[in-house]
Every structure is written in C-alpha cells, then in structure tokens.
Image (cartoon, rainbow, N blue to C red):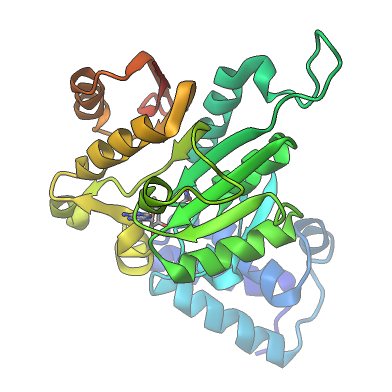
Length: 303
Ligand SMILES: C[S@@+](CC[C@H](N)C(=O)[O-])C[C@H]1O[C@@H](n2cnc3c(N)ncnc32)[C@H](O)[C@@H]1O
C-alpha cells in the first residue's frame, strides 16, 4: 500500500504503541527522520510527501526492531548529550540526560579555574588535567574538553569496543588532540605508570560508573537489560562495590584541592557517602539531585 509521511507515521505509532514502546510518537518520528535523512521540520511541513517503496520497507523494518525492544538510539546510531551529537553503538551506554549534571557540578566546583584566561592577570590559566573513568561513548570527556579548552583529558574504559566509539566522538567534535584514551580497569594504568602527557596529580576526576545491582536486573526496562552493555550497567552484587575502588584510586591520583565528581545510582547516595567517611582524604562532600529529585551527583574535594 502506498504511503505518505502522515500515513506512515500514523501506522508506525500504532505499531509501537501496541508493543508498549515508551514515547512511541517520538520514536516513530525519529526513525522516519533517520530513514528519510530529513529533519523534523521537513517531516511536519511535508505530510503528504509520497514515500518510495524502498523507504517504506526500510522504515517499517526499523519500526519492527524498535517494537521488539531495540533502543531508538542504537537504530539511528546517535544521541544528543550536552548539546552535542554523539555516535552510539550497542558497545556503549546511551548517554542519559541526568549525566549532564556531572558536567554542571564539575564546572561549578572548578569556578574561575575553569576559565581559559585568569581574569585577575589576563594570563592563560594553567592546564587542567582531567580523567573520565568508564568513558563509554566519551560523552563526558568530550563535553568537558569542549567546555574547557585548557584541559587535557584521559578517558579510560575496560571495553576496547567502547573506546573505539569514544575515539570517533572525540574526532567528530574536534577534541581528539586533547582527549587520550586508555584501556584499563578504572584508573589502574595511571597508578602503575603515569602516562607522559598526563603525569599525576590530576585536577578533576569524573565518572559515571556501572552502578546497578545484579539482583536489580529484572527491574530494568527491556531496552536497557537486553540491549545496553552489561559491563556498563552492573557494578557488582549491590551496585556500590566499584565506588570503593574508584574513590581509593582517585584519592591517590588527585592533587590536594582536586575534585572528584561521581554519578550515583537512584538508591546509592547513603552507601557511597559512607565510603567517604571511612576514607580520610576527602572534604566538602556534596550531593546534587537530578530533575526528578533523585540524589544523582556526589562531589568531593581531595585534602
Ligand atoms: C554507566 S557507563 C558510562 C558511560 C559514559 N561515561 C556515560 O556516562 O554515558 C560505564 C562505563 O564504564 C565502563 N566500565 C565498567 N567497568 C569498568 C572498569 N572496571 N574500569 C573501567 N571502565 C569500566 C563500561 O564499559 C562503560 O563504558
């Protein structure tokens, strides 16, 4: 049956709704934009544009995959984060909006140190050394590199496949010369042999580590549980195990006054706070809520 933009969209929305896809209207639109290589404005100003049969087949193949649970972002290969478009593949976590709070908190904590020029003297600010642990798509590393032109960033991940995606995202956003990628367990490679261009101490460490408890797998949406990389999701039996190691390593690598900024799981704030109480190197611990009111970002200063 021949279809135009409006009828194709209507049919796709109905199929996605029947499959209980959340935000089915948005998904139908995004997939059609992708299949036709058009933007949203074009879609809405050309409702009667006739689709050629090949486009219809391609579009409904995508709709079928979405209905079966594949996230829209893995089908279109992209997700926006901090106003930038990132390539995503099933090798990386899809960047979440709440993770943008890490950037906000890091920039707030840096204050004038985040400025490229020292406002008092007019001289260039000293170079900032930042690490992003578990970089995934590279969203945090790339966004920080874009915000802080005087920063050199080391981005680690245990997944070589994720690092390949992150490297392409750094190149896409023209920061590949200042973001260095390292395949390692948390920050281990830095502890063993500080890299040439990145001698410790570091000024800032950010991380959105895997923090879902193993026994919470069943509570995750099928899009997440069945399609996003498990190494990006699960942090151990309780979900907080990885924080202890990360906080200890961060304490060894940050300079005095350096800042650690961590994303928290929806129920992990209390447990993670406890780790800071037993490790003596930290002060000025703060927790920031996300837009849903969930404690989402913990920041602390190295003393
Ligand atoms: C929750 S994802 C975060 C990805 C990205 N930073 C973001 O915010 O979208 C966690 C990332 O940490 C990586 N990871 C898991 N365990 C790790 C470890 N022990 N050392 C380094 N990276 C690890 C995963 O491969 C994944 O890319």
